[in-house]
Image (tube, rainbow, N blue to C red; front, side):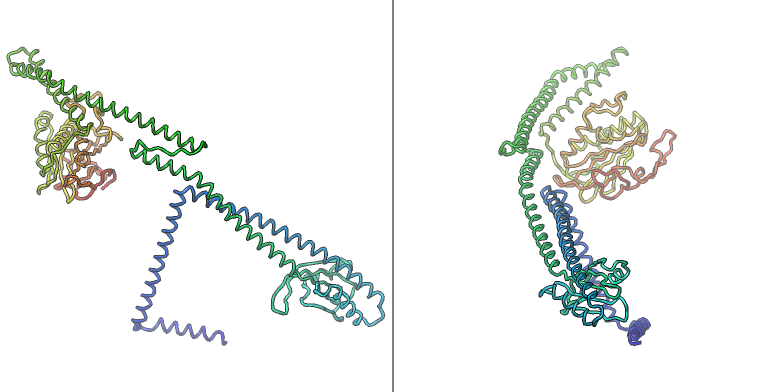
Length: 592
């Protein structure tokens, strides 16, 4: 009853607390503040643990030195634990076997003595006789108290004698009494309670003297336990010292290997960064020294090859520039003669007139090719410069569309403009940007397959962008990068109808990069393509995003609208009044 009363009281208190109205606002608030503090402490500890795990994992992945030393220490601990377990097990077994043999022999001698005394004095006082026997057997153990003697009766009406501390385990008593042979010895291990309250291990050996009595010896194992503790402590100390020594050895050996490897890695990084004069220090004649010599030979050969390639590239650029300049003089003469023939073409017959018109168009294309070659040679030589001025990107779009208007009219294509109402001012080279946009619009017209072309412009706080969208054959996977290569054509069987040179997109890409901007392409077979030019508003600023998406919104959202100006005269595309606002990265391919 007494134990249950506090529980009832607690239950009543709990019910009272639950049923009481929430009038104790300070107590509730204190509990909440305490709970909030514990939560914060838990979250801080969790973050610290995660940071520690991440730091250890990062160092483990990056440091060969740490992995080798850690692995050596762990394996050393496992080996020493195994060896220590085997050694201690063998020592324990040896000590117990020696103690058991000695105990059995002592018990055998005492058993013979007790049996002889009982047989010689069958008529005398049995109690005094057993007391004398117990005393005599105890005295044989010596002054150190090597063992205790217990004489227990096998029947209930007899008395027993004990000369020491402890008790005989019941399991051994039962085993002895069930024995059919009087002198059959049995032993077991037990623990005895000492007078000072401690518990010590002991060995008990017992056997029947006759049908009435049993003789038991209890041997304390304190000495053997002290020896075993000493062996365990010695093994543990030696194991710790060996593990530390092995760790130091692993540290020194690994350091001899890791240090040259780290030096080689640092040299390789500097070489990859463009320092062709980087060389490794060669020490000795071992494998690491041969690695350093091989690295130095490789760096030297690489430096020579790069110098040869730079000289060859310089010669090629000079050759292209010289040829372009030298061709201008005969081309000017041919152009003058062609202009005279072209002006008088009405006086010629039909076949000659067609030849003169063809000559005029090819001479114009030749001039464009020479101009493009000169521009490419400037970019390759790093001599291209920018004439930066503050201008409205909408004016450049209108000029590019105006320049391509005649080509669009001849092909029956409509160019749809989506320009913001407010000015979109940025700092750029108007001549180069106009050339980029004119090239994009003309290419879109040429590949639109008779469908309309959409040109959109937008701007935000940091950047401006122009996107040119066509609904023609599109681009295959991977061609969005190849289209900027020089003289690359998606379909070599396709005939150029606008007289392109094959260098327009390559020059446009170089001009965009010169501005610190992006010129990117997207396309799908049968869905058309879109080219996006993104420029920073301020010259020299880093471009971090674009106000227009690279992937058209109708494609990114999974909608497939009929293209502008389809052959059946339909116009199934939504009229987007303004460009999508947002920031779009240089490598975006995902949906909006």
